[in-house]
Amino acid sequence: MGCYAYIGNHCSVTGDGCMFLIPNSKACAETFGEGPDANTERCEECSHFYLEDNKRCCKREPLKFIESELVKSKYIDEGVICCGAFSK
Image (cartoon, rainbow, N blue to C red):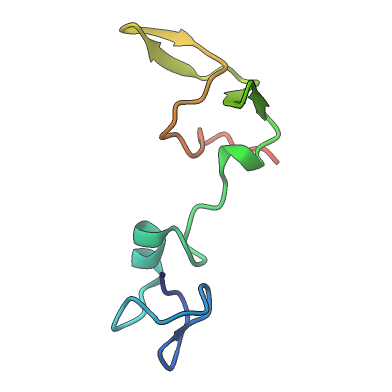
């Protein structure tokens, strides 16, 4: 339950009660990932993204640590949302 637009005690994003006493779009985006300030560019929406054996992969083969060495790998780490080179 987050909050973007406060209408009475109603959040226009979730359709539920607002989590903030005073609506704050930036705090909502940081805390809940909702509202217009939220990052909606995710790996899964990028043209470089694909699944292989149910694992998240990137055609650009981003750098990652494997056994303490920085190497190119098609696999996307679990915590990565977007590499910053988003392409629809």
